[in-house]
Image (cartoon, rainbow, N blue to C red):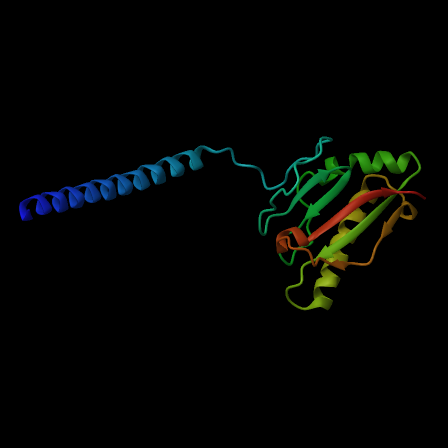
Length: 174
């Protein structure tokens, strides 16, 4: 009886050992595959050029990289921490806004900021960012009286701080 029990325990131990080895090999192979595929994935530029197609919801915004997107007719400028410089592609993203203003609408610019740091400094930075967007519109030929700047707002949603550091441009009635 003891010989049979010993054989059974040895088979269980060997089976367990082989399963453990297989698991380790799977993890190693999986890690190598993920790293190789990750290296070959297409790299998106820091600034995403505007397009007339709506972006997929919940688009991630990279931390500390300025970018611009057009989502459902809203031009969204994202800013690096403590910066007010517009991303490459700003003029292209604003083309539909300029066209809308030429058709009798006004550009409404809303600045947002995250909840980290000093609220007054954040509000001032959000204002500087909104002014930078307004200046870009003026440089594209939009009259100053066709641009409305709204008071900076703190974003309290569950999004990331990078998403909160934005300026949105919409078209509104005159």
